[in-house]
Length: 338
Ligand SMILES: NC(=O)c1ccc[n+]([C@@H]2O[C@H](COP(=O)([O-])OP(=O)(O)OC[C@H]3O[C@@H](n4cnc5c(N)ncnc54)[C@H](OP(=O)(O)O)[C@@H]3O)[C@@H](O)[C@H]2O)c1
Image (cartoon, rainbow, N blue to C red; front, side, top):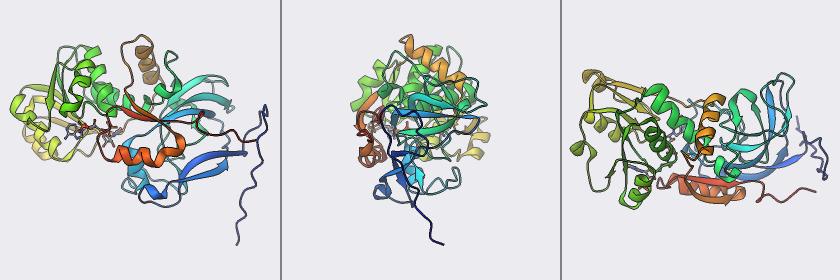
């Protein structure tokens, strides 16, 4: 059977009926390197009863974007192809499904949509309303787009899984990364003693975000310098995770954003080792927005690129040395369709 391509009607200015009209999106049709990212026109999706349609002003790049792109996360995030990549959104609600009670058209929102569904490298997305919160209004979309996935991961890692308390000692690995820059600030806000690992070029940034101690991983071994740590927040995995067991006190916690690979060794030292996948909770998004609006926490923006530069942005993220976040601006960078 020959499948007909959907006929995309062009949008005219002021026309509120946008579903099924064309929008720009960066999609993949197969797993692979950056070359599989394609800029395409696809229909604006229609929200289901529990969803909202969000006009995307900006999105940001997370390592999971290129991990899903190259196929290494098929089991954890089973996706259908073709797929729009990207799972951070900052934008404005355009339409709300019948069952949505917490959001309405015009609301400025942000969040981390479900990574098993079409993502945010696009002009519009439909998102379950219970995955979004009101965005911090003191910063532009190009900054609030940097927040959801990284900040939720930091929050849940430190507080929900790590049980971090005031006065405890926490070691945050890759403290200059997307997740690490939020984790540092949240841990300081909580009143913890914070140690961060990064390389020398980022030491000033990590100190400015509140680290009490910075360890330059290129010149020092953290396990030679630290003991009696209450919590290690691991965003690097592998050997770093294993070596982290040595610095924790008995009864301490090792929380990882990657695979918890050393359960046996952790058990032998009476250390609680756990991995987790961050979830998008509106109450946490709104608490984080409040901390940002109060000036207690800020996203660290490495650079703002155009949506259509997603390929270069992913390549840079994949090199592993971005400090803070790469943002993709959608509204300014996509020419209006008329
Ligand atoms: N489980 C979840 O729900 C979840 C959610 C978000 C992220 N993650 C995962 O968590 C990891 C971190 O994410 P991210 O967004 O923070 O990554 P990222 O922003 O790409 O991290 C880059 C940072 O890591 C630092 N770094 C690299 N090697 C290091 C080392 N050996 N020691 C200390 N710092 C080092 C780099 O500093 P230099 O430039 O100085 O080297 C750079 O600033 C990724 O693997 C991601 O997939 C998981």
